[in-house]
Structure formats: C-alpha cells, structure tokens
Length: 437
Picture 1 (cartoon, helix red, strand yellow):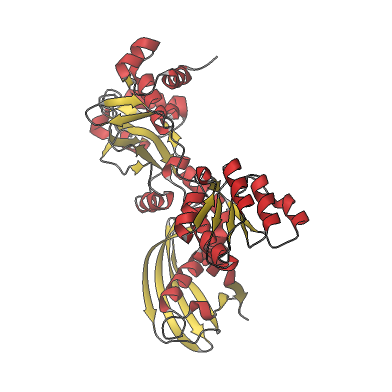
Picture 2 (cartoon, rainbow, N blue to C red):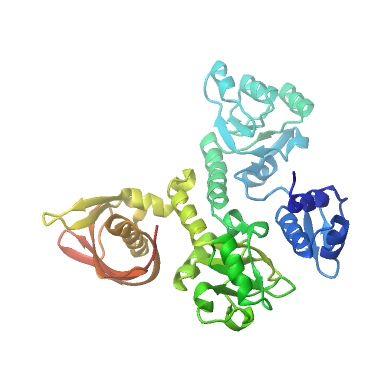
C-alpha cells in the first residue's frame, strides 16, 4: 500500500506540464494534510517535477536531466578542437564518456567498441567504417579527409565523422583534459547528494509547546529539530539542552536557538562541514532559495561521505591525493613519526626551486595525514601560520616533522618543521578541527 507522501508525488507526476500546483489544492484534492502536501511539493521540486516561478507560483515542468555527468557531447568536441564535420551532423548531441585510439589491428578493435565512445584514428578507412557501423563517432586526426563512402555511411547512420589538424596525441590531450575535469566536478559532493529529505524529517513550529518537543523526542529518539514558521521557513533549531529547565507549556520560540546555520542544496559538503565543526553542530537544516525547509544534514551523513571519498575512484585526479601518495611515512631512531617527500621538476616555481606555495599545500596534507596516523581522526584545517626560510632545489628529498602541541576532544594544534638534510627550510603552526569517527 502506498503512503500518502507517495500518492502526492504520483499525483504531481500525472499532472500535465504547466499545470499550477498549490498546497491547499493538493490537500483538498487528495484529502491529505497541508503538511503532507507541502512535503510532497518540496520532494517533487527536488526531483525536478515542479518549479516555483516568481509571481506565477508552483507549476509542473518537464523533468530535467541532472547536469552532473562525466560526459561531453560531440558538438563540444567540435568546439574544443575546431574540428570539421564531414558527415553525421544530426548526431552532434551524442554524449561521450570515453575514447579509444584506433592504432591496432582492425580485428582487435571490435571488442573495445561500446556506447558513449569516441574513436580517434588516422587515414584508415577500415577502422572508420568499423566504428561508424557500431554507431561510434569518429575523429580523423592529422588533417586527413575521409572518402566519400565514409561520409555517406556517417550521414546514413547519423553518426558524426570529424576531422582535425592535430595529431592523435594532441587530440587525446585536449579531450582527456575536459573529461578529467568533469570527473572531478561530478564527484564534488553537494548537500543535495546526502541530505535527509523533508518526508523523513521531524520538525516543530515556533508556536508549538515544549511538550510537543518531548513527544517528538520519544517518537524518533532525536534530540535536535528544526523550528519553522507557518510558511515553512526555518527560524531556529532546538536541542535537549535548550529545554532542561522549561515547563511543558513553554512556547518553543522562547527557548529555541534563533537564526541557525542553514545549508543550501547546491553548497558543497566540505564548506558546510567546516561551518558545522566551527559551531560544534550535530545537525543543520537544509533550505531552498526561499529559506523554506527541504530536509536536514547530520554529522553522521558528512562523516560517511568523507570516509567514502577517501576511497573514491576519481581521487587520482586531485592534487592533494597526488601529494599524499608521494608522502612516505618514516620513523627516527627514537621512534619519532615523520614523513619524507621526494620532489621533482613538476613542483618547481618560476626560479626552478621547490615552489613555496606547493610546499604549504604539502604541509597541510602532512598535517591531515599525521592526525589520521597519530590519533585516528579526520582533520579539517582551521588556520595556518606558515614561515618559509630557505629555497631548495627540486629533485631533492625533504623531511617533514610534525609535533602535537595541544589536543582536546574537538581540536588540536600542531607544529610542522620541514628540513632538507640539516637545514630548516619551512615551519608552520596549524590549528585543526577534529571530525570524530
């Protein structure tokens, strides 16, 4: 049996595009409460089923495909490479997620052909024909032109056949750069990816009584709730500590914490996590552009996301992960924990020495690594005082010595000293917020 919330969502799905929707009309037509109707509209908005338009109201819209994909269209490839379109112009909206260079035997290529693939090859009619026959777009590198037979095949199958003046390597470099950037962008976790939606959230109105808080607390075992006005705008939050000395008939508005930190759906989880740690918050309400509640985000949700990201496939593309992989753990004769780092030419500044800005980033990475190794916690940098004393050539091994100066339940302060041989080349004092697991 479907729930009332699911009935509201299905009812909205069945409405024609541009149909006007309101909380009252939904509640009346489906015989549900206005709260249930409101939750249904907000969930439909999150799914892209409805849109709120100024001076018009909420209307049913066509479902839009999420813009967060690791793909690019053939048309974008044409723009990036200044390619000439020889045939198959109707297929320029074909989406590409990967590519292959057709430099092997034709008999070996067929097993690599798959959907959302781009074939990069030279003046090889047999490879071009094989790819087009499998509905795979083709780029001919090196400034060659295809035969008329290939052009006709591309037009017949409506699959793009392109030509560029670059060699295969340069073409791959341009396309791969965009795909890598989109892979990283796709995996930047937003609040909308992890928040708890409104239909699963308990909340209070500002004119409710403390007795209502205690009722919700018993029903859900939660201790923190958003507080709303009757327009469903977030006006505060309330926690168990706020009602310790309150009577059952005390109004929620008298004991709540007003103007709380709120998260927007398009905010990155990293940014809101920093703010939650600074204020030691266990929960943050999630609101839409009008400040109306659409869900909540908890520390547990954030912690799970951070742990997941440590093992995410896309991490190989991030600079900090690259630095962390080159950072090697070591120990002195006195069992003192430190790290070694072998630099190379890619870390040079305009003078040819180890870049001082990259060294600062390396110190941040080493700090987070040290916190994880030493006390088993996730770290978020709060502040850093960085001192750079001496330049060092690239292709040298440097040593990074961390020392715990102060450690409490929620934060710590760490001293970092960087040496090349016996020379102290940099030093930093770093304040860190701890994200307890």
